[in-house]
Amino acid sequence: MFRSIFESIGARLRDLRGHDLFAPTQWRRRAALWSGGVLVGLAAIAFAHASDFAFAQFRRLLGISIWLPLIVTPAVFALLAWLTEGRLRATRGSGIPQTIAALEIEDAAFRQRLLAPSIALGKMALTVLGMLGGASIGREGPTVHVGAGIMFSIGHALGFRDPKALSRFILAGAAAGIAAAFNTPLAGVVFAVEELSGTWEDRFSGLLLTAVIFAGIVSLGIVGNYSYFGSVDASLPLGKGWLAILACGACGGLGGGAFATVIQLARGSLSHVARLRARQPVAFAAVCGLAVAAIGAASGNAIYGTGYAQAQALLQGTQDAPAAFGLLKLAANILSYWAGIPGGIFSPALAVGSGMGHTLATLLGGGGNSAAIVLLGMAAFLSGVTQTPLTAAVISMELTNNQNLAIPIFATCLIARAFSTLLCRKPVYHALAQKLVEEHERTTGPQTPATKTPEPAAN
Image (tube, rainbow, N blue to C red):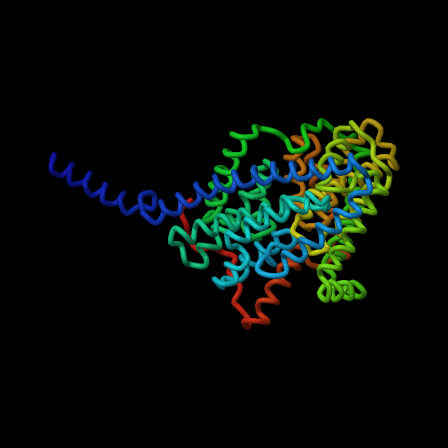
């Protein structure tokens, strides 16, 4: 009897040794995800502090003279355009299109060109330089790019060569990047599913969650549990609420769709701007920088940087803003993106949306509901730009620690997406990623896109 018991236990142990939980390959994958999540969290925090320090130095220049940006900003824009003409070309722009393109195309050389360690480091350094020059850019999109690059490099270094396996690492790194940048873990997962992959599969959801959790632990451990814009305790009465939802949804969708169309430089007269930039990239960037500085002087220095301080002040009701703030910030965002320099559009889009919401609150007689309308405007414009209503809604709630407006925010984001598609048929990040794919195919021939359903993996 005892012999049969021991034989049964031995057989069970042998079965367990073959289980995924104990398989060496699965432990290598877990080691990559855990270490990658930690590194992405650390990189996001270092990036945030460096960006804040650089922009603080720019603010010190403004303290000396509000006219100094007329010299400094064009010079920095020109320098960035020159530095990104060669091997660092992949650092240009937001970084989210590069991540999407790397997921679309499984070619190893293409992925290495977009996600190499030198690109990740260059992305951070050059975005910080842009902040030092007062560019109207954000760091969240670049953090997604950096996170994808870090996780891709770690996966590759630990022996994962299968393209689909590396796709999962890229996706997990991008999710961890957005989660760590905003300290919004749920938004990181939703963003990866809605924007980057387009599907939700049990087979890879655990990978996303693992990377996001470890990046979040690092962020919480170092900077604490905080809301990006602080807690916004706002609500709306039903009657006035639906009017605000419709107004913010329509304006945010049309404004966001127009912005997404303009920065692509793909239609009509905008294509002439694209050709001018291609012929003289450095001079073109300098002119864009000069225009940004001129708008900065006209706005009372309100449009430089991410726009975080202005958006927070409008949400908290601690500071008023000119009626034209949203439009001026929008113009600065367009010029900064046209310049072709590294930098994202996430935070600047939130600032534009907050300015738009503030204007609508004034027109609607928001009174005590102004903060709520500002929040709806912010969510609506982000949804209009990205055409990802779920991500825009979740990230807006997490950024403000506000669940009272969950239904109004979701409704506003859905309306904004519908209006945005009237002006911009394809989501902006995917449209920009498609340009990278087409450029690659012109030099190497058509490639087979990566499939959207990853192979099975341990959760």
